[in-house]
Amino acid sequence: MHNIELSGAEYELLVCMLTKEIEDTRVEFNHTKNSEYRQYLKDREFFLKDMLAKIG
Image 1: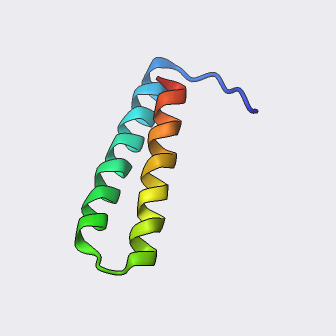
Image 2: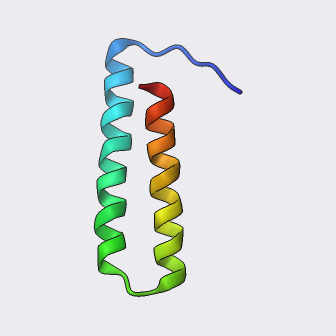
């Protein structure tokens, strides 16, 4: 496990970036019909949400 120290501004930026990536992943998920790619996006969303929970 890695520990990093973030300033308040860095933390807010990281939260914003992860939140935006989750939203973008959901949009892409809704636009694709390929089942393998949909699974990849579902896994990616889970991973991003897990990261967000860890820093939150």
